[in-house]
Image (cartoon, rainbow over all chains, first blue to last red):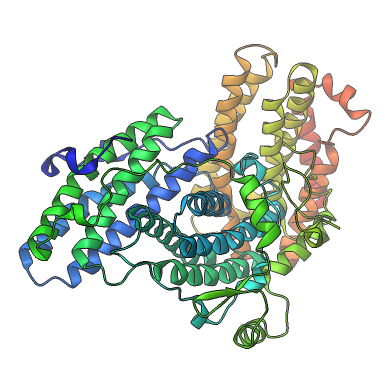
Length: 399
Length: 196
């Protein structure tokens, strides 16, 4: 890998604005697209949303009006990038179909990051989280067949298996136990910073999506399932954002954000199968290179440091969407019964966890269990995609 | 794709007392049949396509007889909403009739099927968003159930599943009989609605 974003120049900022015609992108065909093209779109939308929100927070903490204007200029372009990326999703898809694609992203993105993560503590955080996204995919897939008579397989196309993970009802932990310990910004591998930012952004977008689209459903079970899983997304954002060292300065964080966008657009450009979408990744990479330079200048000016001190000397190995079936089965076999205690992990239910469970469930089955009961009452079975055989955990096999 | 089959609406164990949820599940059944046509070849494709045409005919007729009149009558601006839906249906029917004249093995078949699939899918989502939401909020459980019963009556007119014995019969159905099927569906729906 020889690509170093710090040494490349992209499209000058004053030539990045797009008109309505250029913003009006043709959406992908939901029935015939590469599922991982849709995953890359959803990921980059989450990344752009985080870029916009972070820049707004930075602006609210900035006194100098000239710097505020500088941030606003880049942010407007990022808002256009978000529009182009997310508008690649088709209007004919239902919210539930898009939701299943979001969960496919959560499973295969988090699994890949867990596989590649060099720091064992961070790796454990991703391994822990991915088994929960995996179970969400399974619950939504059953809701999808129940309401729309469609199989999640027509969305994930056998690239990702659909079967139970850590049961969703057990994801509701005391908020105290959702906060992790952060990496050390001066000691950690630069790749770990990019991983944390990427997964945090993806989960944040998922949280935003569920909190806003959940109530658009009329079916009581759908409304309730979105509420339940939406609350777990709140836990996941807490989990992942606490991995990031809060000692990074605002400008350092800005540089990390822009660098990560270069890394991801570059990665996706390298592997994109849809030529039209690939051209967008390439264009956006060339825009991001310039945003990175602006951010680097701000960091030099305000922190008096060189961005090279905090960044990788060159781009890490490309982040890849690919099946992670064997890896996930290994985790299903070994980490199903974990929960968190403080900033660590234990196998036994502890007092704080049990108290939370008792309060939130109020003696009733949660929506994630009721959706399975309703599905069973309708079809006399559940919905799974097990391309690699039986569930690794004998207690989770279909009765 | 796995062997797991999603049964057609009416064949699952839903109570079918809500016309909206019934029609939404039928929209899924139609998409599943499009998948089946795309995936199969030769005789199998011919058969899957026949079943698709029948389901489309029955489903659209039921909507024309049950859903559109209700929307026209009960919803403010309903006239225009239905007009838009009928325009979509007309376009889909035109594509369908071109397609029906084309052999399923003809190289022209698949591109036309893709066009039909797009038209039908856009039409279905428009119904779900601009008609179904209004139906649920402007009527009660009794009426939702009565309309569901009428749609079920339409369904009974055309077995759309590959039951033994039906396949061979289905092979011979051309557009003429489909038009007749639509007429019979209409009669069945009107009877079930109590104004036949």
